Image (cartoon, rainbow, N blue to C red; front, top):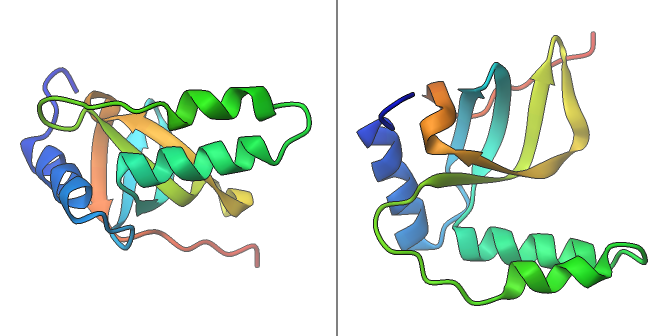
Length: 119
């Protein structure tokens, strides 16, 4: 999208202001279908930092995600957790991942997350 969808920006702003991680959303971004729950950026960053800190080989990167940042203006990114990239009938990764998607890259979206089946 050359101009981000104002409604999607409003949804992201509401998630940011409410510090809730219960909003399910599915988006198409750069041809990938990503489904999961939105989280406020601070919550998402903290969780990514925790995962990295627990890694023997990646722990040095955890501080990048905990550095204090104050963003001005409307949200520019969606922060997904417990998210999957849908590929056919499979969701990758099975356990859900942490994805950051630029709102301007979203070409389509819908409320809720898609379930998938391997049957």
